[in-house]
Length: 220
Image (tube, rainbow, N blue to C red; front, side, top):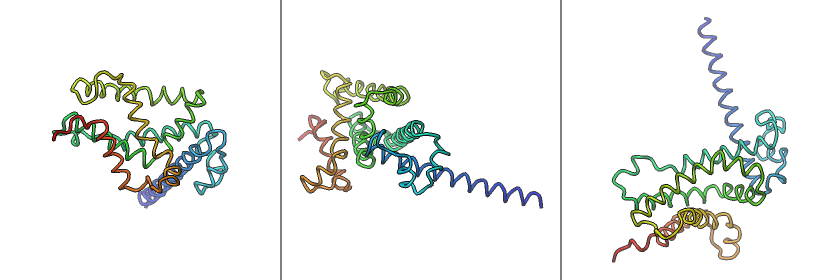
């Protein structure tokens, strides 16, 4: 009898923990959306709670205050980016450096299309150049960029990228060209009638970047 009660209690605790995690992720996603749209100062916790469909007090329960919520949301954002952009070892099997570079571009473009709030939030933080940017750089961006730059430098040695260009420049060229059209989606829609969230457009855009960057490798 006691064992059954313990199992029942454990099950209830497990369900409760799952519900808490779902609520937490919902708040984080709503926070990312509103921080991207309104900036840190313009985003209000009550609006974030309403967007997530939870009580205002629930946001404070999980994250205490807006500063901590911003950091938790950005942490979630970078963790998600790492998962979605990651190229698994089995994907790299038998790929040349050129093919691996093309695969990375394609994954990164797909990520930028799916999550334009990433670029929007980091641009706002960079414009302000405050402690939040320093925190994000120290915790996430610096190490990630070092890995990317090392990869670019290796690809340069193999002739995939032009050797005469600073790898830092190549990194930011890649980041900028991959992000901008999705950050400016409303402008592109109004000006050209193009829905950049369409999977066809996303794939075509990745193809265009790959051709632009690596067309010198295409043989007749």
